[in-house]
Image (tube, rainbow, N blue to C red; front, side, top):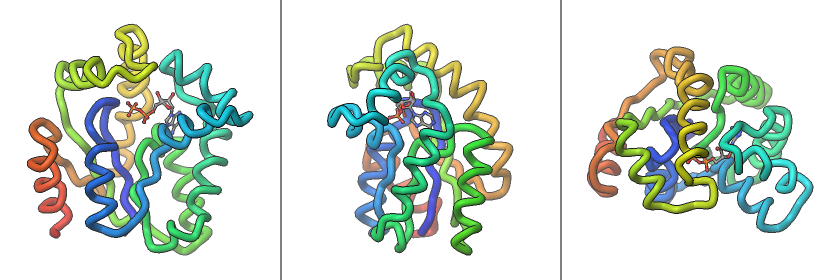
Length: 181
Ligand code: ADP
């Protein structure tokens, strides 16, 4: 199964993706996790990405898309994937569509995690990641509203909406039901 996970920062996409990856037996590919791994290892990509992430800005699309392309070419992604954090703009969605088209593949759906701003801010402050301070969170939510939200219209009928407020297991149940599993 090839799915894209959409939703504001702090919506719990990563948490749900871990559960889903196990149930659907496909890898969870998170651009945020890939960036953080690169930052941890001090790679040139990590050094470049860090300045944007710390400011709550998007990492430039060419850098991000190259990283995603090479990850999708790894063997485990042959059976499908849960793409978390990419695409984040309509331009990135077009790049993903081209990458898939070259391989003769299509997406099975786009899960959209719906959640109120109050709840996401609360979750992010509780999580306490380095880029989870109030000012950076505010900027990430602005970037989400301006750049990522238009993807909901872009994907149109492919969108599968999930209520992302509640407990982890409860939300997982909704996701599985929405996927017809
Ligand atoms: P969250 O879901 O809380 O926003 P992520 O781990 O998905 O956290 O992303 C953290 C940061 O990584 C983003 O704020 C952004 O700077 C960068 N990032 C992740 N995915 C992308 C992307 N597709 N394009 C550009 N930047 C990205």
